[in-house]
Length: 205
Image 1 (cartoon, rainbow, N blue to C red):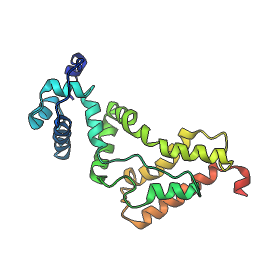
Image 2: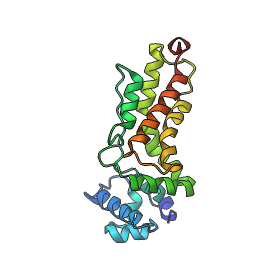
Image 3: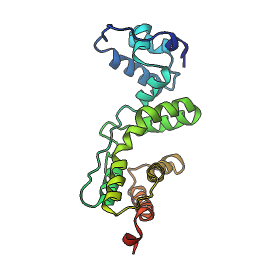
Image 4: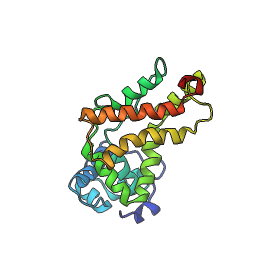
C-alpha cells in the first residue's frame, strides 16, 4: 500500500490543515475501492489533487486511511440502559438501518473481504473503529451485572464477540441480507439464546 513515505513524513508543528483536503482524500480512496483498484499513495494523490505531503500529514499509514474509508457511514450504536436490556440490545442490533443511515452493505462486504486477506488492515480497523463501537453493548452488559440480572463473572469481551458473531456469520457464511425478515428473526433468537447463558441462575428459573 505504498507505506514507506509515511514512516519518514509526519506533520510538523504549526502547519494548519487545508480545508477540504480530508474530504477529497476520502472520496479518492473510496472511488478506488469501489472500482476494485489498489489504493496507493500515488493514485490517491492523482485523484484527489491533494499533495503527497498533505496525505502523509493526515494519515499514519495507507492502512489506516483504508480502514477509515471502509468504516465511512458506520455509527456508534446507542443502546438505552433503562427498561428491558435484552430488548434494547435486540432493537439496537436488528432494527432497520441499525448500522446507521449511510451504511453500505456492499462496502461492508468489501471490508470483510479485504480484512481476511490483510491482517494489518483488520487490526487497524479493529483499533480505530470496531473497538469504539463496542462501548454501547459493554455498557449494557455492565448495567445487567449491576442490576443482578447478568452473572458477575462474565468475560465481557467474549460475550460481545458471541453476540456480534451471530450477525457476522449471516454475512460471511450464509451470504444473507438483513433485508430478509427470516434472517432478522434467526439473529434475534440466537441473541436470546446467548443472553440466557449470561443471566444469573435466579433469572433462568
